[in-house]
Image 1 (cartoon, rainbow, N blue to C red):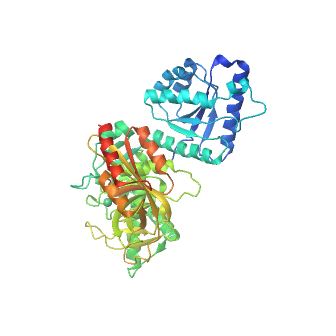
Image 2: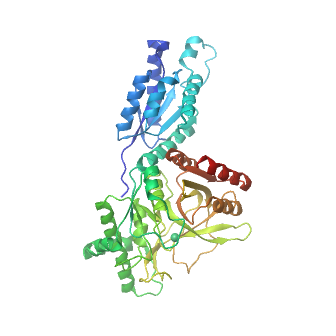
Image 3: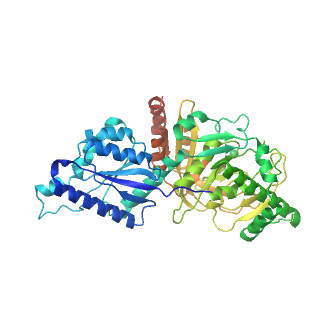
Length: 498
Ligand code: MN
């Protein structure tokens, strides 16, 4: 299940002793009001905690080291109300291991034309102090997020909220544990990768288990538990018999119920948060996990097919980052299948043999059982639906041998023109930005996979910020992408990331 901590973010205001006690009292009062307003805004997914004004090297260093060891602290938000000489931040910043937001704002919105004097100028000079502060990050080559704008504005607060989700993705990445039920599909390149480097860069633990260990966990599930879950399925989903025998259909659904329960117990007992399977290595399992894996993804587990542990971990992280969002539209493992190349209606039909997360479903979800046309097991039960529409992102994390690259494509999800009655799999349909032609050309030039971690609920900016915090290359394919420029970017990055 998707369980994460009640994370908090520390609000640290910078100043110095030069301005006297009265000024520092105002600085503390102002930052206190800002924290209160941010928490009351309803635009932040996590709580902001006010910290005493940071005025000396020693206090900065101590506060940041306290942030490092506080497990509830997912990041620090910093702002220089006045001038704060940035040499006093060097030691603290060098020791900080939590994500940092440099909020470039100001307590007052308007210049007080009638009353402004030098005391006011000394006290309200973020335009001055935040530049000194920003300089030291650039000098230290440190990754940080910069957000500029007035703190009472909803769009500024929402951007802070978006960054908080990224920061939680950064912190939680260090706790992701992926269970592989099989190895990589034979001969497939893009799903491979360096698991040691992934642990160094992202913190992921990726462990393999013999398929029959987990099959034994499935076999141990009681008939009572299976029957109860089958009842839940039959209540919740539409059953599409399509001429199949009712009892046989139910028996096949029961196999998936056993897999769901057995897999989840196995994952929970060993503290894994993502799983990969492989249709060619099923041991004693009677069916390829379909409906079962779809439901596990909906509960928050990451998933990758054919041994694809990188996508499984990314799906998990993106589910954590979008957790608890109002009106969330869903996050899933996805695969590029087939194109529609009719002018004006271009797009890519997305699906997988079985494993698409029902969190992205629009409307009715049905259970169907049809042959898989692959592998050697009985026809699996799957949840079938079509995805929601609207803007979304598809991401692919690839291993280039000497580094990882995250490819982020903005896409527009649409309904297909007509139903596809003979296709027994869940689907989405999208047009990549800036167009199918340029989007697909850029994706292929960048080396992107056919598997993606897909979401309606996060932005390209959030995923790019996540990649930056991980110290890896990110490339964006969006409305601004031009192939000539994109090729140059890939070439320049290949030198920069060498
Ligand atoms: Mn696949």
